[in-house]
Image 1 (cartoon, each protein chain N blue to C red):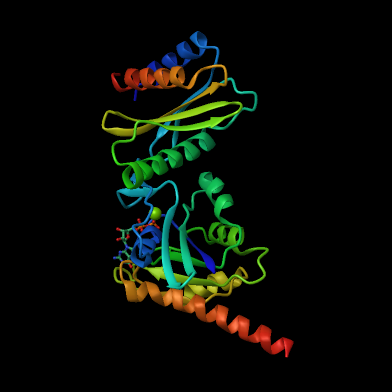
Image 2 (cartoon, rainbow over the protein chains, first blue to last red):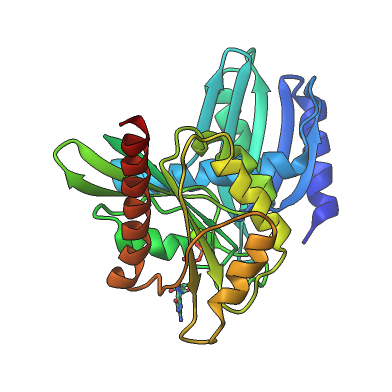
Length: 124
Length: 180
Ligand SMILES: Nc1nc2c(ncn2[C@@H]2O[C@H](COP(=O)(O)OP(=O)(O)O)[C@@H](O)[C@H]2O)c(=O)[nH]1
Ligand SMILES: [Mg+2]
């Protein structure tokens, strides 16, 4: 896996977007790969990976059993900011990308950001 | 009455299968492709949820939880008000019994009465003496009936459920006896 490249991508994003608080990548079965964060309360990669992989799988179950259609993203909105999670494929591996943004960043912007990030990783 | 039944056990023991076998609704399935070799292609990352109706307003909710420690946030979501617990053990191994005991304790500790039944799966592939498993757990202070079950088969899986219902009935009965 292109860990170095992805790490650089994450770094670049965190530098560019001040309201981006965390970027994290794990396998779809919840094993952490990479993680960068400037959240006040530092979270462990293992924990983020377990929680985001679960949420994505539940998002998937919802899209299959309730809405119909393919899952684009799973979103958790809070009064402190948002967590967005996306599935992606890299070298035939199912991965989960997640970002945390501060409440100052609009949900649409955050969604655009994670979509671009996922696209960039998938192209590596 | 709504009763919460939790299914715990090692990876590959058959938790998701058991819930699929017993549930009358399409289960909420959170299996994904495993990135590591765990002896099977899929692994559960969220929760397995199924349901059995016993009668009017009377149902059992089936909750399967991943056993890996990093998913402990799901244990916390599920562990309140549990009615009974099923532990599945794969016949090939009783790996790390201490971990299993810890897991059992997460769910049945602090409960007034929460029966546990143990199912040993995959006995069609490997014969195993259930008494050995029972003894290992007994030495660690866990007393529970042990059965050989095939999680893919309904009758076999129902054995565990019927056992837990009987254990509850017996407990209710002795409570009444004590009061009389
Ligand atoms: N041969 C055999 N296979 C079983 C038995 N119980 C479950 N399985 C299979 O074991 C595999 C793993 O089961 P799964 O439900 O995913 O395990 P989980 O990780 O505990 O959720 C599945 O392919 C099941 O069909 C059993 O008693 N005998
Ligand atoms: Mg499972």
